[in-house]
Image (cartoon, rainbow, N blue to C red):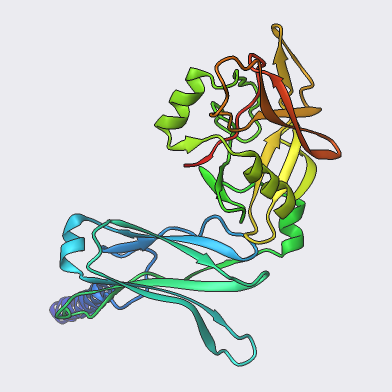
Length: 306
């Protein structure tokens, strides 16, 4: 009787092991199914959507390695909306990259609708197919804000910002690491300015370009991280920059900080004997003043992309 009990116990144990093995095999098979959605596959991944405005966003597709770049010859990114009532999908972006040469592909989405949820997904394909079909990331999503909410707060991120004026504006003053930093002052046509601008493919804006910024954007007196200045927002692109009221450096001291802003414009045609040069000046309630200032005055510089 004890022997039969021992045998039955061994049989039950073997059956249990078999069941566990089958479960493990099934689990491994599921993991090997490359058709199953996942946050990142062994081949591709998508960064969370960035730079989201009421009508735009940026999605970044990343390929895992140079080997993946050679093995998988097509990569597709699809962005779509879903109708809440009919569940119907509408593509707003559906692009296939054939034989891409770069491991990172940045996708700028424009013309989006405010207060709308967008889903997105990336897929990689081989030329001849694979045993498991296609690699695919999980479906992710983002929601655009309303224009009103966007105008109430926030400064756009990035090295250069497109405000729909024909040139892209640097997000920070020359020498600064953040939009609100305002302790950098330069003389007109300073050699340091020329060197830094040339090294970073930047230049000084012209008076006409600043005038376009005045006319095409909304200027709001604004406090950003404890510093006062103007938030300059574009309705066309939904993006904005911050111009701190840095004041002016004269005779060893700064005056007008947090009250007035002084910015050099392009004075490259200035004569050798000139003692003054053109600059842009603003204060609360006034944002369209251009005056001549002594060329040795210390003013801020806000570059544009060359």
